[in-house]
Image (cartoon, rainbow, N blue to C red; front, side):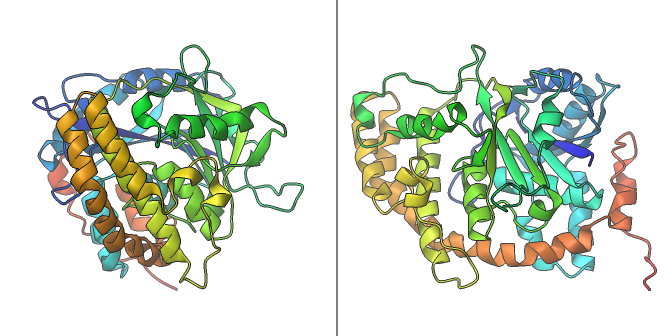
Length: 417
């Protein structure tokens, strides 16, 4: 099995280092989009991939905070990719997405178009899965653009056991590794401030990562890391990422997989160095965490009414994210917002989160969580139709040095038996 390596990369305009992906609430701000004109972390990521044995096609998915800069961002990313001629890398952006949408219309999946997009973390990862299906790859390996591959056996470790059956009879179709920093640490044990007395997110996260120190090598995971994740065809054509989750789409994917009868596993020998820049706004990140945890609580409750799904409980996901996806998350977020408003910078933003955003997060969750289940039910049929689709395969050549006006989306008639 030759994997396709998928690298999502996020860009914004010169004028703003942070933007909104959507004009609708809530704001789906990316953590650290790179301003066009800067090189960002993508070159270091690509350079590190050179050392990985067995590296084949590399897909760079380009998302932007403003559609007006889409082509500019795609050209900029292509220029970076061209610096690595020894890597079979190509760029997927809004041009290709338009052609994909037209093909979905032809195949009878018009209802999926709005959610198959380059807006939001989950939707961008779904795009990588779709392209992998069109190109007929049996394995997708996700690597984020702010990460550095540390060893030449990176892909070999990631592929280890994938597609096989474990001793307990469980199929290993989805696996994750873990992040380390420049000092090789995978946990952060800095003391939590007093304002987080009801929001010990870091402590719960560290406890969840204790599994890295414990045998066996491969264990069922409660959390996953989207920047080091491998998915087998039998998994990614069956279970999608959730386009409506605000952050933590990788953690959410563990829940989605469990709901559909599977598991994501963590391999304690698979690691990658994560070098994210400092977040521009801690308050924005907290707001997104509030949205995603309230959303997960609602999603799990809604799933109880779906007879075809395996039930997932907060208890089964403890310590993380289980401690943050139960019914207490609302009041804990409200109190934490107030305490942070008293103790930290961005006081007005924290106060607004406490007084308004928690309620808005609940409204968003009630309106949106059922969308995923409707989307997910159509996902396997759509992926089956797109698998090695002749029309899209001929279009997705990866060669961007062409006149975009020729990409009309008018596909030739494909003979059928």
